Figure 1: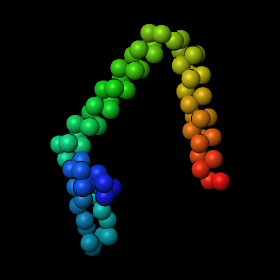
Figure 2: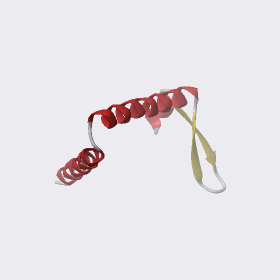
Figure 3: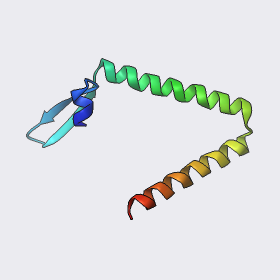
Length: 76
C-alpha cells in the first residue's frame, strides 16, 4: 500500500478512534483500475470467440491449478 500511495494511486484515510485505515482511489488509481477492467473485457471477448464454454472452463481450472502450484512452491 505504501508504494501505491507514494505513486499517487491511493490516499489513506485514518480513523484513529476506530483504529481503521481506508484506502481511497485517486484519479490515477481509478484510471489504472479502469484500464485493467477494459483489458480483461477485451481478452474475455476474444476467448469467447475462439474457445467453447467447456474449453474456457478448462482453461480457468488450469490457471487455478497453476496458482496453487506457485503458492505451494513459495512456502518451501
